[in-house]
Image 1 (cartoon, helix red, strand yellow):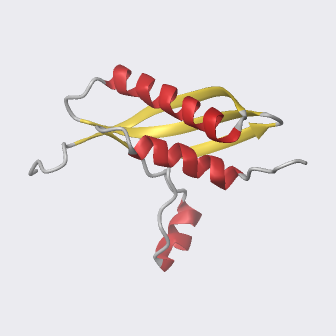
Image 2 (cartoon, helix red, strand yellow):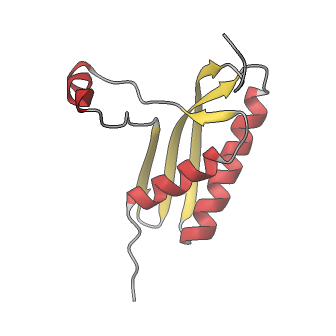
Length: 113
């Protein structure tokens, strides 16, 4: 019996894992001109999180915003490790790579600008 796991489920697992790591957030995807017009309907902006599936292997690309003052490399490694472990544990698929790009720096939550 085969069970198919959709890309949206893999994306949700990765996003939920990343939300649990203090000091980072998944960045919003950059919008192209045509996409800006389509987003006017109030839909949520897409996030910088992409899952590519090749058979039983998965590659995850994620863009993160990191809180100012945090260790960028340490948080990027933690994100890679956590996403890899959770996706493999929950799906049985092999994670080939978790590519993390730090796209921005944010103020700590509760800090006034």
